[in-house]
Length: 202
Image 1 (cartoon, rainbow, N blue to C red):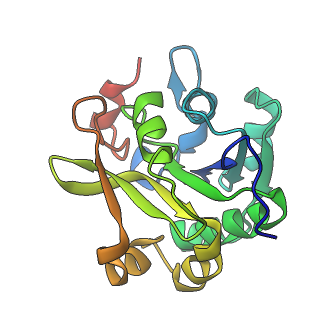
Image 2 (tube, rainbow, N blue to C red):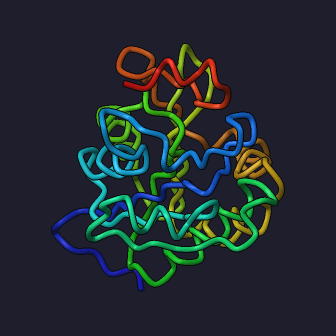
């Protein structure tokens, strides 16, 4: 461990795409249509275009249908059997799957934020300095997604991820260590949570 290569750090993408879309009448978020394709495809494309060389996707709601309908070549697909318990379990499952990837850090993004594109991913990934890096996109100074988690922090983040809080508790406790990367000029951090929000999709 700890060897460095001249290629720079390996930054993985971790896409949390397990949500069941409770407020969308139970339509799995990964399968919402955006530009004629499932939203999960769009989100993976954003991570790849932002420089993530391996992308792990955590599936939950309608995981079988997502595997059938979405074209996700080269991605590591991970099922979260406890997805209904909230985002925390998906983050745990995803970080555990990354342990064997050899990545130095992961950029964590959410499937239901299509207003966040490759430039925000690129900026947050560029904040990587070491395997205990912590960085997050900021929108007018307020912390949001994507979030960069150095590999040395994965176990602790996973241990603190519960319910719908994801990494929020951990990030709150380590506020001083987080590098905030302003992305408000290149991205919009809205979520697709309600039927009204579907207007954001094309």
